[in-house]
Length: 266
Image 1 (cartoon, rainbow, N blue to C red):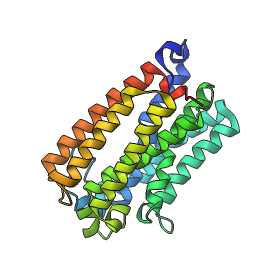
Image 2: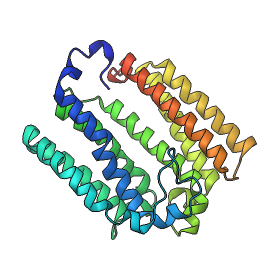
Image 3: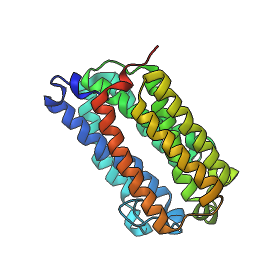
């Protein structure tokens, strides 16, 4: 979130790179490793799983040691960051771990308790808070945190829309399963338009708001003309996945370069 022109020397510090490595690999292993471990049945029925775009499709035997592997990877980083960052960083990391546990495991298993499986995606924003504490940066404006939360909600709904059929077969309850694909698309459209509004009128960011407006237009065409309530096939999902990943990378570069999300109008 730190723009290039204000970067000074923050990324010359080894601690920044240790934190970036932690978020990219061990923390991602916690988030997606636990998700795969507890979603084996649904993933086995999901045609979009089993590739580099949408994640692995593994057997029970292959998954059985994942929780122990996560502990092995996470504990040294938890100890290290707690040592250098004190109690605040320890509590934040512990909270992030607890969020992933209650998201995946019974009796909570929030991933199957609509709409909490969407709302809990706010946990992704805590990655930014981790970076702020670790690198001794200023807190992000609340407007930025709100935008990031809405983006996390919308991104999660997009995945649910693609997984309606396999989730139904596996008996998995999600918001998209509960309200149906078309209504889930309308919910995603509302979030996209709200995000575009925030970017344009709160941050004066024409580039990102224009991109989200164009994406919203595509979604409208999807809802009323192209797909309506029909499921996507695997080839279409892969094309969407590639397009979304490219768009996300370009958006991140723009956010870093412009610094607009650090400067709301009020």
